[in-house]
Length: 326
Ligand SMILES: [Mg+2]
Image 1: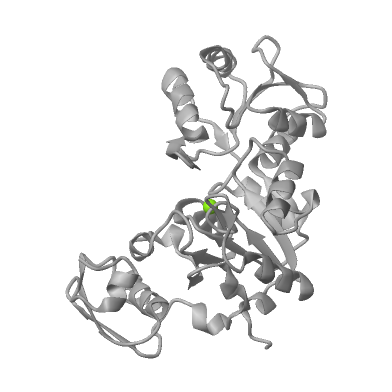
Image 2: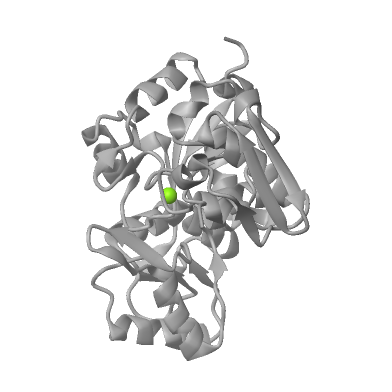
């Protein structure tokens, strides 16, 4: 089939948490789907905002979940942050690292020297580190107040864990913003450095971004002018999608990543067979029958072209399946 979604792109840039796996398990069909992409000679790359694990650790985690991956196929926000700093600093310059040894290793890899005090630091880099202390934040404040560049690996407000959503790197970045009045340059999604680096690493001319978060994965794709597939296996919901701002709207929508072997035309936002969506003022009325995802694609087209509707009328069973009833 020449019109499968994956046939239209030379690389697939997969987000990890909520896209390839969730809750410690690979998404159903992920292994076979990614194997199909490899068999098709489509470049596979995994792109993560997580700055606390090395590419080797990420690859081992994926492989352990049944999705074989090589460290060379991983792009992290730690790598992107190190690249941003390497462009700003001279080789051998010291960088104050708020983060794990994996982040420090990326700083070393670009010829900079990771340190843990502000004393002669020429920059600050900040990534998630569970053992981060007030002292670390204090050292960073000293350096930032002295005017050195400050790069945040990501500004994810929360970190999804087995115990629910816990404070992410963005929450700790906010603590420093609050204390210093300065704002960091951001490397990870939705900012462009990580997206640009992952495209470069994939040697891709026309890649597809695949992710579960509208405000990071899809916004990052839009900011980098890349096509994107939004999947409903993670953080953002069908309701979020209907309300998405123009800067967070994907090219395609599917239940999960297995859709990359489906027909591209079936996954686009737009009116779909079986469904009729009518607008009356700011209200949308649904009739018809078929795949609930097709209804979502139809609703998004109607909603986005006229501004978000205040409500969707009726109680069609497909609306409940999408979490859009009531
Ligand atoms: Mg995700």
